[in-house]
Amino acid sequence: MPELPEVETIRRDLVKAVTLEKISVIKLLSPKTAKHDAAFFIDFLKSRKIKGVYRRGKLLIFELSKKKTEKESHFLIIHLKMTGQLIYVGKKKKIIGGHSLNENNLSDVLELTLPNKHTRAQFIFSNGDTLYFNDMRRFGYLQIVSGTELERIKRVNYGPEPLTDDFSLDYLTNAFKNRTANIKSILLNQKIIAGLGNIYVDEALFLAGVRPGRMANDIKKKELIKLYFAINEIIEKAIVNRGTTFNNYVDSSGRKGNFSNMLQVYGRGKLPCFVCKEPIMKIKLAGRGTHYCPKCQK
DNA sequence: GTGTTTGTTATCAA
DNA sequence: CTTGATAACAAACA
Image (cartoon, rainbow, N blue to C red; front, side, top):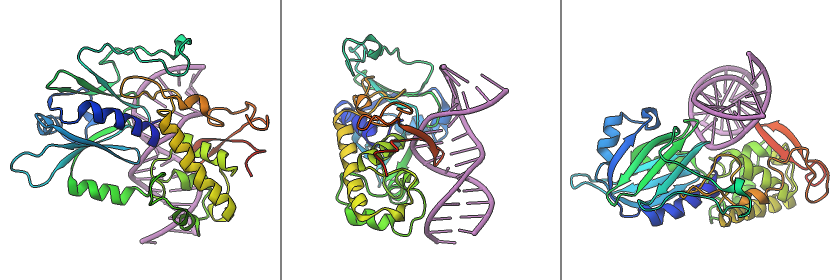
């Protein structure tokens, strides 16, 4: 479940790996994964260089080099949705991920053979390195868009991101005003705040002491301030810890994220709250598994 | 066979 | 037009 911290972790690693590298071979093992005709997709990308790697919310963005006749830059955008992985293999490196949570725990060590049955696309660079796009559930996609199209996508679909100036206390106050939906739905809405998903919404609400089912416009000023700082704190810590691996996520080297063992409520239904020992509640809200402490969260 | 997992969009209602 | 609620999608596993 890649959310902002996971996608940002991948982005930061890929910047180092692929910037200014030229794509020489594209293999599209699952044609539906690209939102284009396979031949067009492959032909368009061939011999282009990656000029930069960016992110908006959970969307990863590769800037492509321009051809001489083109006025406008184009971009390869990648959404990992639930089970997408981007794994980069240098030609001399053998992939053995791991060293994630506990070096003594062998179950934390991943072994990846690539490509595998979930590999949907493969980009081979002129230096021999390869970027694999794996996606067990096939929700993810690859799409080529012009600069203009990209700006429209960013503008229409994504609100301010945590840890940026646009995501201010004033903004959050206004976003909650006149909203009668439960706060979990509001926080999951990418147009309101970009980047949060099921895990970090539950974690931020726990840190703020606010129940996920609360109506957004009922949140008191004091709670809203706590929630604002909680969202930023959770996202910042998750990035520092290279994201959360709950089941599927790995970074671009095939390694798990370290935030998994810092989760306070997500995935802890019926287990005692780390703060007050009360069993964590698990309910369904906004169609999603939702975890909270009935004692710590009001 | 049943229920569960989630990011996002579609659809419908108000 | 906006907002909210819910279903749907995809694939694998217990």
